[in-house]
Image (tube, rainbow, N blue to C red):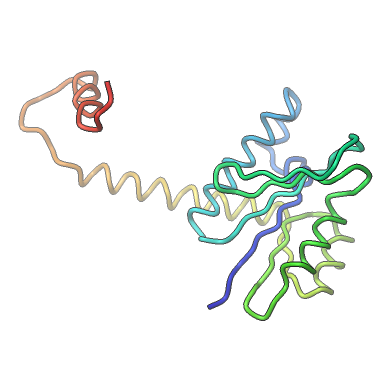
Length: 171
């Protein structure tokens, strides 16, 4: 069985997506967090392994890795660009049963990773794909809500909310 891996050039995507650009103008950390949330939705929908790579911005220190929202996050080490780290990851993760996709709009990077056997996905293509995934998820939620049991006793939304919390064991 083939495994799909999506490597995301974090700051490149933030700079390309309108929603994330607006968040970045106010606070970069909010844009990063939102990208992580969106990529967690992507992972949940596709089942792909997702790794987001951020430049360390010449900050002293070693490479940092963490897992957030079930997505892997890598901050490069000092003086290492996200492009360089992505190229290393493509080499490290490549295998007969692994298909690597790289999301970036950096044309030079696209050619380099393409030469290594990875598939490219522009930041804009990823945004369009996420919009489609959002529609699918919304439709599934709507279908689920339409199928939930209907109460024969008319309840206000507030009372129905209280009952739902009780049902879930919340106070």
